[in-house]
Amino acid sequence: MVNPINSTPAQSKYGRRRIIRDSGYTAVATGTICGITGFRQIRFPHKMKVHKYSAYIAAISTFLHWGAAKRWDKKIFKNNNKNIS
Image: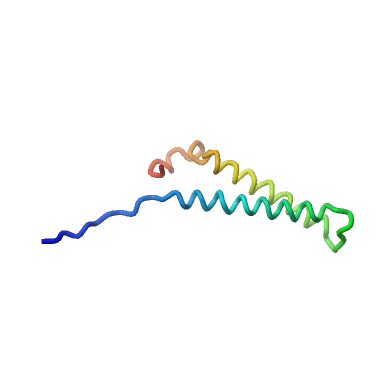
């Protein structure tokens, strides 16, 4: 007789890796936009607004990327991440 195997899927690290990957690419892209709009030769309407907001987004995504890479999420959310290895 064949017994079916009921197993629960293991929690993968792909979610954390995806956060690290996506936040890194976001930081690079918005940092590049911020740098390009900072040049004096580039002129278009609302240039400083684009420059300012892209700098904010680059800073936030950089700290998110750095925090996820250093595994600060384990230190901040101790109770919620007991099952994730």
